[in-house]
Image (tube, rainbow, N blue to C red; front, side, top):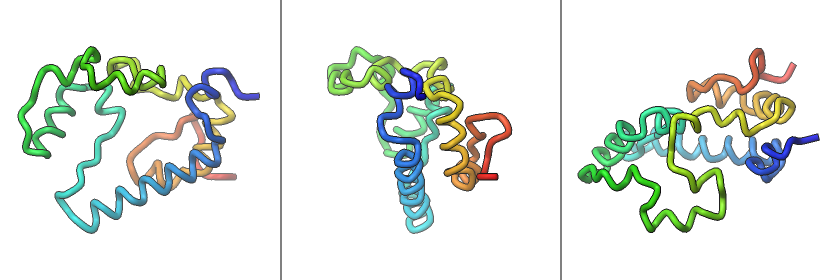
Length: 134
């Protein structure tokens, strides 16, 4: 059975999630390959580990000045995200390991379906020793 935390975070099945994730990263990869310098990849782990540093990098890429208010969750434009409790909290270091929101069997399925994609983008497997279907 799937845990409540997994159900809350992973609404589609692990297979549907993996298919969508693969498709999205392929599109990002094509954008980077087709238009070098036009696409900036931002890793969730980097954003949650050092939000200000990553936001400065994004804003610099866009040619925009840094504004301290973009680091605060009380910005009115963020109210639209309040439907999802995992997206409506301020970004913080405790969010960097989203694996705590996925139970081990679901994480293993995601690892098996996405081993090549995770490796290409420098992500570690979700479950120790996972990676690739046996």
